[in-house]
Image (cartoon, rainbow, N blue to C red):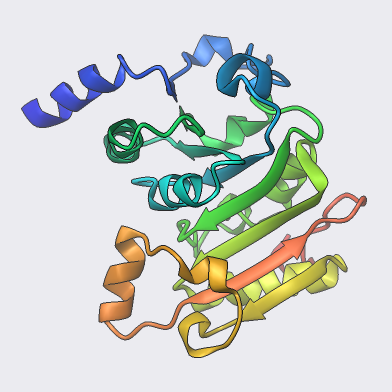
Length: 230
């Protein structure tokens, strides 16, 4: 507990970590909405976000690989974010930010076409609560409000049910499915998805669990839930 409190205190001093109070976002927009490029990153580069970023392995790894883009890791767990934020600081990465919030409030932070891509890396599959899945129609409609027309949504998961559900939902809504596989490391292509492994991914691979991957684009229509999932 002492170590966790020390990390929280340290993270409060990080300029690249945003930790808004509930009253700053409840039923209203956060001041950085539509202003991440100008007020936070101070450039005009495209922005990619990782939702449920955990320790930020993808956020930091991609930022290192693509200095011409900006990356934001989003998670509610401050103890997890600290790891990625500290790594980015130690590496002197200027194109990385972290946002501590619940993803159901994500619409308060980003405006239309402000985000150019979304990574979902091993989110909770929510096996008993379909509407809480980060690939459910509820969340995809939130993403529609801020992802650009060319922006990809990429999911990596160890969970068969989440993978099948997401693929069925994408087909049902006639999304542009750019790639999908139920065995990422046993198939060709999708090299970017193989570049970095999260803490959980490493553990899953050691246990012999196959990693599933889907990359798709939303269309201009409201996302409809699968009839049997409503």
